[in-house]
Structure formats: structure tokens, C-alpha cells
Image 1 (cartoon, rainbow, N blue to C red):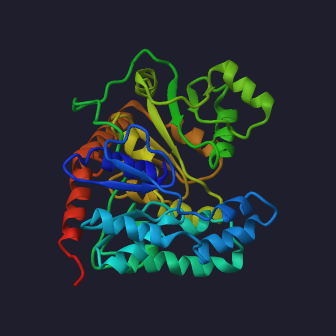
Image 2: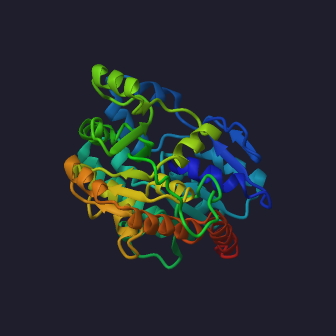
Image 3: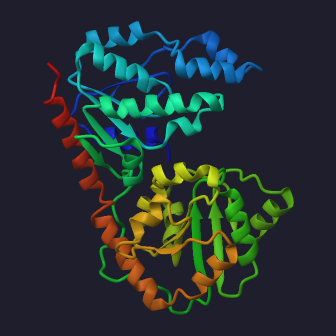
Amino acid sequence: MGGNAVLYRHLHDAASMDILVVSDGPAPGFPHKVLRHRIYSRILKRLTKSPLRRWALDCQEFCNPVDADAVDMICRDYAPDLIMTVAHGELWKLAAKAASARKLPLVSLFHDWWPDFVDAHVWLKPRLDEQFRALHRSSTTSLCICPGMLASLGKHPNAQILYPMPYRQPICNNDEVDFDPDRRELKIIYLGNLADYGHMLQQALDVTKNHPRIRLEVQGYNPRWPSAFKQEMQIRGLWRDFVPRDEQLDQWLSSADALLVAMSFDPSMRRQMETSFPSKLVDYSQICKPVVIWGPEYCSAVRWARPMRSALCVTSSHPNDLVSALENLDRCERQRLGARAREAAMTDFNADRIQSQFLAALRTAAARRPV
């Protein structure tokens, strides 16, 4: 889940605050004021869809050809106590400039390493990395999605680790996690991104589709799989297209014996795996079922799970090793991992605790207004 979606969850529940969101797009159902403002260069927008796309992106990232005066006017009229931004896209640069010009506290949320998502020329990436770290250093408060993000950004006197906000409260209150003793198959469910992890899930489905004791079910939008494989998985009921969250989706997730988190083994995505944190891990924990993390040792999810053995970690990229680990996942270990998921939902990934930390960070930053 992107940083904007995480921020939406935070602000949606911040009824006690007077918030103005400045965006270049709509925010349906949002309970606060939203000002949709055209601050981008329209010419540049068109160029990003032309053969000059990469050069246009270079210009967009480093020349920042947007209407800064428009944002300054918004700050003057609204008179905010602080400015908050998500370090993703281009608007964070405007937010930093506005905070500096108006001498306002700046709170920055770092959910992904944005420079790795930019399709600019490679020789310009180091400069964008430095701009990204400069935002961290100049922020009054820096809210980092995981320890790996903070380590990559560098030290900061007012940096905090703020895990993703779950979409719901825990749905289990019992001390033990129940399993169907008559079920012969171990049902594993994956819900989420099939763009980055589609190949991994395809391999896993291929080696488990005829397994007598393991059933892997996957839901996600339009994976880049061969048409024949996609059709086969649909017929077998092992893959379903993405649908919005509803009661049926929650029931499907609750029917799992374990929930799968995938993180890429691709060396080119190492920094992304170190500095991002899978929101599905947070959401899975609210269901209080065992979590299986399939990813490299250095990824943020495995690093979170290791100290308390909070998940079954499979750090080999080979799908047969995933199958072997699942075959050895006995009832006793599933009970223990289910209890760990419940504990995580009550501590690290507790919605009330995360929201309280977020609101406290805003109030503390507002009290540190630069002189």
C-alpha cells in the first residue's frame, strides 16, 4: 500500500484536527477539506507521455516546474500550524519549500524510497537520493515506516518508526487460535501486489496446485502470467481478481490456516525491500492467524519477525523450500504463530497505538515552530 493510502487512514480518523489537504486529485469520502489545485506544468505532463518522457521526468524531479506561489498563497490564507507531506511523488519538495518560507514545522512521512521509483536517467539518481535525505534532515519530525528506512536516511534527532496503520481492529479476542481439526489441507492465502511479486506467486502456485496437503489461494489485480496459466488458476479457484474489501473478503481471509507475505529476492530491489514495510503484514496480524514471510533475510518483514519468532520466515527464493517449510508447519507451531500474530496486533500493529503516536508526533512538531 502506498504512503498516500496510509496517510488517508491516519487523517480519516483525526477528527479532532482542522486539516486541509492540498492535492492534484480528488479524495472521495474524505472528512476533511480537500483543495484540488493544478500546481503541475501542463506542458510537462504532456511531455511525460511522449518520446521525451525520461527527459521530462528529469526536469520534473530536478527543476521542479510547478507553481510554488500557489502553495504559498494557500499557506497564507489557511495559516496552518504545521505542514505535513508524504515523501512520494513531487509535492514533498513544494511542502519543504513552503515550510521553510513560512517558518512552519515540517512533518515528513517516509514509506518508500521514492528515488527508486523514478524513471529518470540513472546518472541523476544520486542527486535525487541526496534530495530525499535532505528532506529527512530538514524535517522537524521524520516518521519512517521501518528501521531500515531510518538507517538508510541517516540519523535525525526527532525521527520515529511509525508502522503502517491497519485498516481494522483485531477480529480475535481469544487467547488461542482455532483450527479445523478435520481439514486435510493447509490453506494458505495471499492477498496483494501481483505486479512486483507475480512471478514468485506463479512459481508457488505451480508447485502447490497438485499438492495433497497444501492449498495456496491468491487474490490480486491482473498478474502478468501466461493466459493459459491464469485461466487454469481461475478454474481451480486458486486465483481471483482484485475486489474492494468487504465482508466476504474478510471471511475468505479468516478461512486461512496461514497468511503469506512475499518480498522480492531480486537484487535490484534490495533497497526497496529494506526500506519499505508490507502493510499486508500489519493487516494480516489483525486476523490473528499465522503469518508466513517469503523473502530475503535483509527484507524489513523478516527483520521485524526474527527477534520474537513472530512469523515463519522462508528466506530461500526456491518455491520448493517454501513448500517444505509449510509441510513442516504442524498444529503446535501454528498455534504459537497465531498467538504471535495476536500479540503483534495488540502491540506493534495496534491501530489505536499507531494513531496515538501519529497524532502526538504532529502536536509535538507544532509546538516546535521555528523562530
